[in-house]
Image 1 (tube, rainbow, N blue to C red):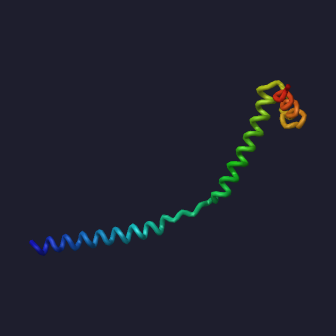
Image 2: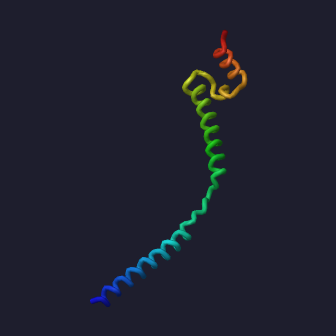
Image 3: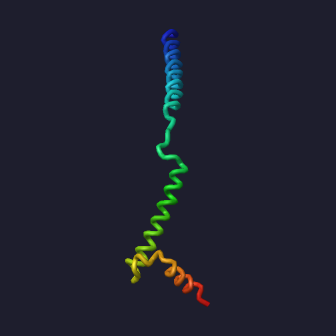
Length: 88
C-alpha cells in the first residue's frame, strides 16, 4: 500500500515536471511575429484618417450641400468659409 502511494506521488511529480517543461516549450513557441509593424500601423491609421476627412469634405460640400464637389478643396472656398466664421 505504501508502495502504491509512493508510486502515485512519484507519477504526480513526473506529470508536474512534464507540464512545466511543456509550458516552457509552448511559451517559446508563442513568440508572435507581427506582419505589419506598429509604426506602420500608426502611419496607415493617420493616412486613412486624412483620406476619410478629405472624402467627407467632398461629400459634405458637393453631395449634401449645393456646391460642386471639385470646389470643396479650392483655397478660395476655404478662405470664404474662414471669412464667414471670423466675420466682425
